[in-house]
Image (cartoon, rainbow, N blue to C red; front, top):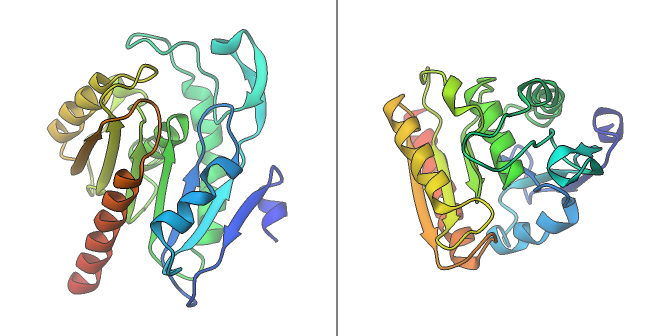
Length: 222
């Protein structure tokens, strides 16, 4: 059934128990689901979560001279004032929402996250499309369409991890996002690490602790 919902391809790792929380992860620009698959073992060796990692469709990317690659939307530049592909984000957001609807069909908590462009896409879905999520994981990401950031309706807990020496998306991008998000009522848990544009073991451990706390709070208040 999944291939009809997401023909580009999905990797799914079932949880040990049915009705477990589901984590959907989105890879970075030009990468693939294979890049994120190992994270499930590092973060969740006991299989307490169901993991779903889709491939982005291939499309021409302006940033890379129009070369085709896996991308969630077009990227025109990485500068703070670069134009953004709002229409592309909206189209992809609508597609991903269908996938998320399918994955939460049993009513389990749903966590969306990603690395770099995948993290930005996750933030778009949570903030601009206001998709109902238990939490968001933004790993070395940036805040898309920050000039049009809506006020928080029901704040979604956001974990944001970033490398202190990231040359692709400088740490300043996280700091700007934190200031804007908190001013609009969003709840962030920010973490920095001695790395560049990567994911490290300490970050995954912190993200797992963040998720455990979120799910525990949901059980206590439900």
